[in-house]
Image (cartoon, rainbow, N blue to C red; front, side):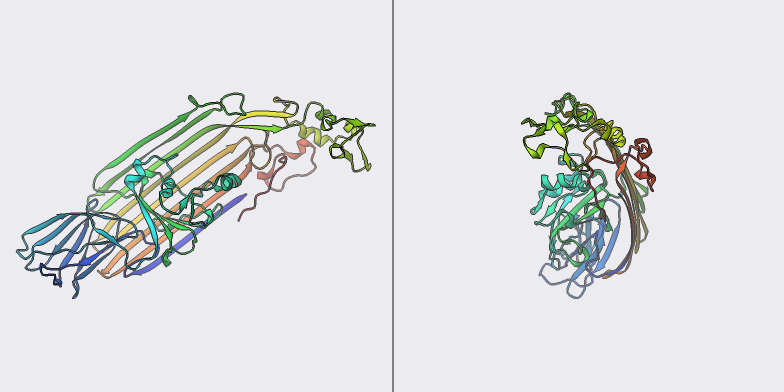
Length: 511
């Protein structure tokens, strides 16, 4: 099954309070004097401490101000007004899709005097009806995660539950991108965004790109009554914000190793299943030009060699010669099974086979050739036990550049690449014996470009372009033995379909 998806999106928005698929935050409040009267015409400036990015607004006749489309991070707020001391507040943390409320109280005095406040801001959502929780970078890096999968932290929220074992087993590898179910909805009812760009996999209803935790600033799962900009999903919307470079050089290296040294034997395995798993990578963020241009990049690789054991039914030694008398354990009466349900029947002769034995001359040559794919029983009369090694390799990398063109214009570019290759020696599609290996090949690319222009403190235009390409090949045959070698008189119309037919193969339908 081959599925290739291309998604192009271009969004041009005028922002008054919130923008579609918002990936930023806002700060608003009211400036007052010691008597509680509003201060008109005060200059309010918010500066991001990591990069020096700043945005300014002026209080209106009601003393109110609003600073829109601020990148997530930590901010310092400065308020300057005539005949009042300068007000500075540090430690303001701004999260994605949230509005911080800061209402300074100015003290009368010289503008050269300064009042310094160190406190975080209160988060308010006066016009938002959605519910959700932000998972921040500190939680991503410090909480234990199996496989470094960021989506596991979404299970800490109310209403978010993991996939049930039955659903996960039924979908197999086609559900690998599904993270959770929310508020009783199906796992396919969720939506996923990265930096405001689409990250939804139409094959399995999950996410496509899975950035490492070291490349994520934070993410938010909107679990209830999402606003219009996050429409299209009944379950939830997961909005991921990737990291950007800062004025400080920061980097990380990681390597996680798992093996079978301390593992126990599988109940059905005759020997210990092999396991060699490595997950490794690096990330770095740095300024290209201080307070002006920043870059962040990452790479992560995954290598897994994991044993899988199966106990399956194969033809017994007698059955390989056409003798199926073992199917009639209760015995025979005049050469036929006492229980008719166990009796072989020759539909061409309209008569049963005596003693459940098929004459050698009636066994088709193609059947004899296909019989070679079935190994001899090693765990009983007609049982075969084997341990094979599943191979899974994946690589992903990304780069993000942020540039402050002018005090009114900011540019951002991001590119991410993801590739996975898997070969399963035991086909999950029905063939439970070696000889019918299947593969999965996926390659995804995502590009986002955004320009933000400030016309005035209350009028900001955001232009965003995104491109998503996802190629997904599922159930690829790895055994390409021509059918003519087995005695078939046909030639496959597709080269990728060349190979022996799968015994008991189930069909998968893609969309």
